[in-house]
Image (cartoon, rainbow, N blue to C red; front, top):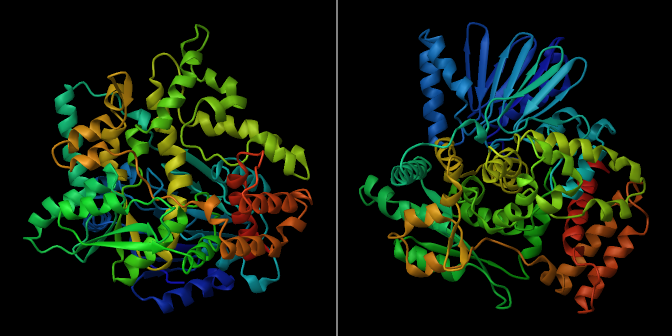
Length: 599
């Protein structure tokens, strides 16, 4: 595995050289001298950026040019003795990467605001390990040749079945924890955590609407410009508003900045089989409008299994089958020599303006307007939250269908209290805070880091590439989270319009077909592909070869039930269970994970 964009550290109360992780980190550094190495008697750190001053070590994993410039300024001010101003960077955490601060006996881990960079850690009585790369952390502390030691976190696994994510602050591996987005974790004889930022911290601005829109536009343009690399860029272009805006900036402002010399290529997904819809038509319109080369990455019977195998090899099961498209796009860009990739992911979430959010608003509005509701009273409805409140949560099993397949139903008892903690961290909901603000808070705290980014970030970094998300730029997020409700949705001509502010920004910049098209994303038609014989056989074999079904976690007949669903689907027979494909996907990915990392 290539170790680009990785921070890995091991800390011990005893001599660190006596722990196997010490040799693991040393060997990793021997294979990649581009990273820096810090070693003392109790600690070893391997990272792209390390600075030491007055017995304090700061390590980071810069992902964008903005990160690199900020860390350079931080380093210079700190080394010159300007400690107060240099610490502002750490306190504000406006970086898009993880930070680690170490002094003997103390360790502080900081995850960026939107969770662009993962931070995992493992602590026992005498050793603590931390990494932005889950696979490396598992291999360093639970190596396969150790004869065991790896075991699943059952509660996190059940949470993944329900919502497509582990429990907050956890992973699917027992003993390996995750720092939540916008949180810091202090380890000093114990573990303490806290949140340092929330979208709800920023009040709604008092500027006139025209002024607010201009600030939003300027911030977004600047975020895009700072996301490009001088060494070449790939754009994942679906032809939707978000990726089209990045392409517009590339073809206009970035081209002007480079004096006409521009190294940017666009990539989109296409299907050889015409029965599958793709975004290639709209991507082609955008690339021609801004004079950018476009590569159509074809998915067909010859290569789709290759990408599915990659997806199933992930250290954290992927909740989105769109990961197949993402792997194909990443491979195409990397094979063409691009290690810097731009994506429009996250726009809908921070702008809070996709149709499902409006749907949830209407479902829960009557509860909030009830005369007896006070702050956080919505938590009294925790059993109904899947149905009435939170946008964007993955929809796999519901609690009833999950209980139906589990061998021991009482293991789901954690779920209600966990949901209360999970949702309460988004902030209170009452008559004085608008529901959209609460929903955007949920998106930033949970959906973006724990669902979206964990689906799409891991694989490119394994190849030494990095995906940058201009719509998740900290300054733009500050502005986007402060939009008024009518700047997200607008009722006009007897219908609701979404993406109001973004459409106003791009109104005179985009071709009309792009402005008027329906929302477009890279999706993979998993259910239809299951009718293809080779794809069907591969999925069936993957399911049957896993020992997950013998683990005692699910009932013995569960595998046969979903194999029957697959068979009926292939033969075009009616299936009286509408969510079977979503449930099958999560069973497939978890059973493959179990086979790869546990058995």
